[in-house]
Image 1: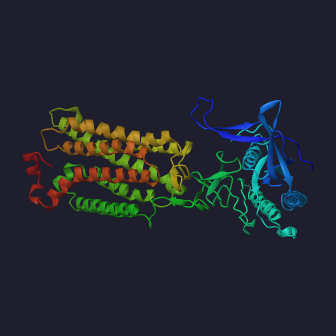
Image 2: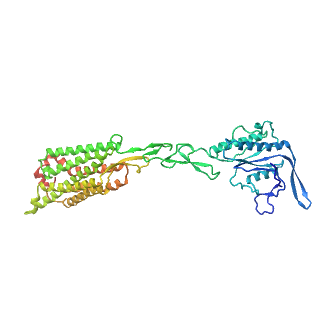
Image 3: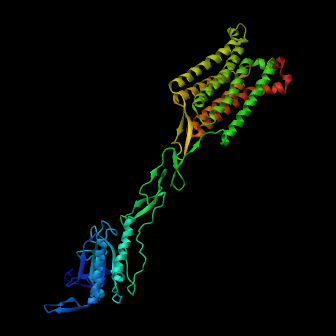
Length: 543
């Protein structure tokens, strides 16, 4: 290749006529230069010494202008450039080193002049055209390396051991590694004072490899081919190195701690065996069932005593049985939900509580009727007896049965897998089917309890022995308070704790009925039998 002719001179000056205090670089017009250029996808720059001296002479017509020339070429030095061009040509001919990539070069002769060497380096960095420091006009081309060989380097007759040849070969090998890992960074190689290069391939990665659990994010600060490593997002994994994307786990799986594998999600429900909360509910329900059964046995053995008779023993038996079964229905809420338990849990709870509240309402109405029937010629006397309370309980319970049957017919409850309540676990729960049906059951119980509370409140000060209304008032107050507080707690919790809130409300409200209505009576029967007489009840007005 014949060198293109150009003139160059470089000088560094400070201040001058420029008012700016900062230093700047001024490139003077060039006259003659020796340049070797071959286009390519990747350019290797080089500054060599071919001519040993730069000389200048003044032009008579322009005494202020000095023209510089490179003189005294050395054949031994010119061999370096030929060796460099040969090495680039060998790399381009080998399809296994840089497939689909052409290696080019941009070489200059320094003429053993530091000013000329500086100008050549700046020209290589700027690319073709005007020399602009810190700016490149190479468009799509990339400058992969720049070689500068000292004049004192030793050379061998063996091509493969020649320093210039080895330098280009090392750059080619480094670029091969670089392209195989799809990374890019600028490489710089420089021989030592003896012209020898290290036998190790230069490290050419501008980014570290992204481990599994991370994904690559393109970076823009160094090169578009460089990247950063970002941890996979919530619910995603990557199981290979240098993954460009993370994969989302299926709904029934969740990433492990390192986000390298999707594991089956933890399954949550109120288990009979593996849940402490379930164990607490089981023990407490059985204790409450035992207490209620004990009260029922006491009432059966003392059913002919004035205390039991005065409170309508048939209603008391119905109320105690419904409370006792209410404690047992807690077991329908425990364990893994299946079709049968989902169908029975709300229905049994609703009907049993309706029977209990209906019994309390019947007791309240009977107290009011009994007070009015004590007046002479009262029309309420014909309503005294067993039929009226029984009819009240049956009528009120029938309405709840109709609501429950309608609910089951239209949209019955069913078990489902809740995958969206918690990201890292699956909630096995009962879907209530019809929300309207569920809240209709609760609403009807609330209406019965409110009516019973209002009637008992106004009848609490009756001036005779039938003053059970004050105990009913307090029991309904506890009952209504528990279920009113339960609704926001039920709506604000998720998973197994939603079921736990409902179980807690069942246990507390049942205990409220048991203690408020029957505790005093059991105390009189067992501890103060002298008070369990008809004469005392009529004289003191206490039950």
